[in-house]
Length: 71
Image (cartoon, rainbow, N blue to C red; front, side):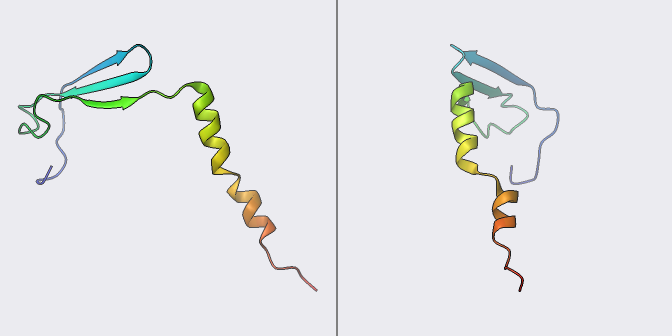
């Protein structure tokens, strides 16, 4: 919100077929910012999460391998 965060906004959460989520916020508390349209998102499967995480790599191990050799 332009004026800053809004506290204590009632929200309705709907999960559809375990694959999608819809968030509906109380328009009176948000100055009708979102109108009557829910905010939608997807719920990734466990396999999707594992695949996403595998693409991130292990940054700690990578940083250690990038140190200059001594001597």
